[in-house]
Image 1: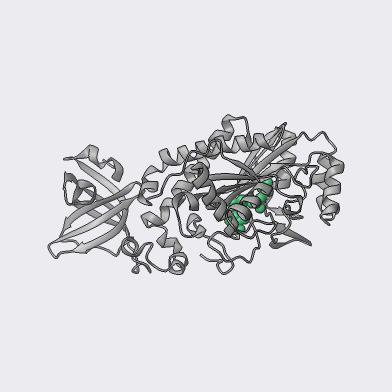
Image 2: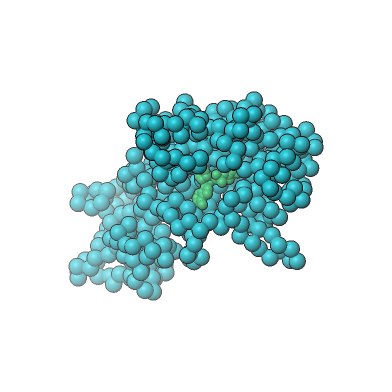
Length: 422
Ligand code: AMO
């Protein structure tokens, strides 16, 4: 009977068939030990008189499950037949079970197509898949509709960070740096929408927190009273995402030794002004208008010490720091917020401008050409309700949840300043 590694304990004393990869091997002459890995785990297999193929070959093994206290997991399979389905033709560039995580990051990324098979390398992707599942499930239940907006666009939405140009027949087009404008338009259609899709940022940053292509988890909701409702929504949403990660990828979380965060409930909401005061007066940190990465890290520590939380909303950002679509306040601030998790910005969001005239004015005030925003602007002539939303950077959330040293490990095939392959 064909079984998965995780179910072997239910088959002790019985004959089973396993399909998987040769994870590791050891030849003692008369007998050979190997570890077989499938999508659910790893088990030791003992066989005799075989010439084992190279690691990462795919195999089909038939044998009897026996208890074996010395084997990993306390079980082993005594093989009766071993068929090589597809042999590895060369040794892997990195010895997966031994060197994983110890090899140089560039080496791990260079050979990602095979190093990803390592249990620790693939674990963050499983956790991320569970987070996204929780994201979708919660929003579906709240009456949101999943949308799919164009990724080749006429203009940028965010300002600031650069755009990648694309030749689109005779026209100049760009890779979308966010679905911002389209998700707002779709609020006019479905009131509540979300999207899970990649976005592109031509940023020169070569840091452990920046990717040039990342997965953006976007939410937009209509008929709101203020941005406070958007933050409430994000708290409940994050809670469900974390729960799904724990139930759906608990083994992976344990394998990585991740320290699970505090409950994302009643997250403290500090105004930008107050955050700057704390930095200056209480933490003795010289702050400019913009909060540097170091300032955010310090605020993360502050939130942990003062409120015992890993989460912190910074609200009411000044107008100069937010994109044109952000709802302004009369005092020069806005209804825009960021969410810091363990001292790293994982979300930006806020309430948007929903009146045509104000939007036009805001574009002009930012020195942007309304021409480029034609279709978007038009929709504000047709009763756009007060609305707001946010976007979570999926890789950053995954990185910080799992304590990964680099955001690149939270993406299967990261794109950065120097990496376009594999
Ligand atoms: P923003 O530009 O702040 O906001 O991006 C939202 C979130 O995306 C993540 N992020 C990144 N992750 C990895 N590499 C990058 N280079 C990178 N840049 C951003 C961060 C960030 O908080 N349209 C707004 C969202 C909204 O208001 O709804 C936006 O895109 O986690």
